[in-house]
Length: 365
Image 1 (cartoon, one colour):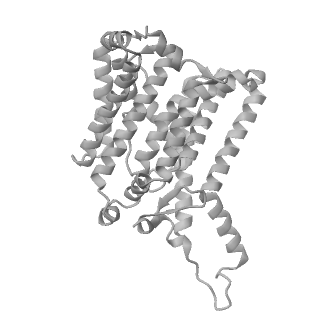
Image 2 (spheres, one colour):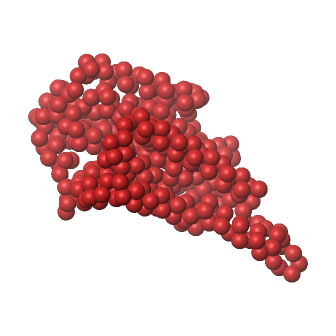
Image 3 (cartoon, rainbow, N blue to C red):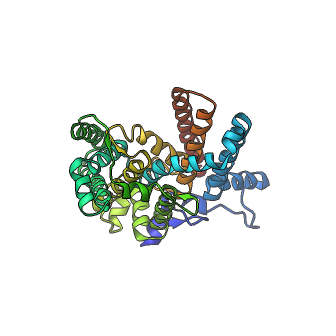
C-alpha cells in the first residue's frame, strides 16, 4: 500500500505520490536522449534540484547565512556574540516546538489558528493556585502534566469538530482561538500568575554543557517529529491524507481518525511550548502565545511544507524558525519597531507561497 500512497524523495522527506508522478517519466526518442535538447535538460535539472528537498534546504541555509552576515554588518559584536546566538536559539525554541506540530497538521491538509490561545490557556491552567499547591505537595511534574493535558484536550476538541463534525479547519480553530483565550482570561482574571515552584524553574531554566534546556527540548521534539513524519506509518498516512483524502480512504486509511490524531499531536506540542514559555518567563498569563499562529504557519511555509498538504519537512521547518528568529533579533538590535517586523514577515510569507505555486506549476508542466 505504501507504494500507492507515498514516495520518498532524495533526502528521505516523503511527499504524496501524485506530486511526483509526472516528474518520473520523460519521453525519449528512438536513439535514447530525452526530447527537448540539452537546454531543456539543464533547465529541468535546475528546477528539479531547487524544488527537491536538498535544493529547498540549501536555499534556506543560504538565506540564514545572509541574515547572519547582515546582522554582523549592522549590529557588530552585539549580534556575533555567543550569548546572542544562545538567545536566538532560546527564543526560537518555543515557537519551534509549535511549528513542528503545525507541520503535521498542514502536511495533512489542515490548518490551526488556535495554537497561541492553547499555549496561553495551558500556561494559565498549569500556574493556578490549585495546580501549584498540588505541585508543592507532590512534585512540579504536576504542572507539566496539567499543561500537556490541557493542550491535548484542546487539540482533541479541534480534531473532533473537524474530522467528525465536518467543520472547516479555519472555522473550528478560529472558534477555539476565541474560546481558549477567553477562558484563559477568566481563569487568570486577566492577571499574571507567578510561578513559585523553584524546582520547576531550576530544571527548565537550567542548561546542560552550556546549552539551555529549552533548546535541548526543541531539538528532541524536532528529531522525534522528523522520525514520526519520515520513518513511520503515521507520517505516510498524514501525507497521503494531505495529498488526496479520497485516495487515502480508498487505500484503507481511516482519514477521520488520522485527522483527529494530527490536531491532538499539535495540542500536545502547544502544551510543551506552554511549559517552555512558563520556564522562560516564570509566569502563566492569558497573553502568552500572541500571534504564535502567524509565526508557526510562516515558519512551516518558509520551510517548504505545502499549504495545500501532501508534502512536509521538519528540517525545513526548523530552518524556517531559525530564519524568522534571526530576522527578529536583527531588527531588535537595530531598534526597528515591531510593526516593521510584522510587515517583513508578511512579505516573506507571500513570497514563499508564490514560489511554491511557481515550482508546482513548473513540475506539473
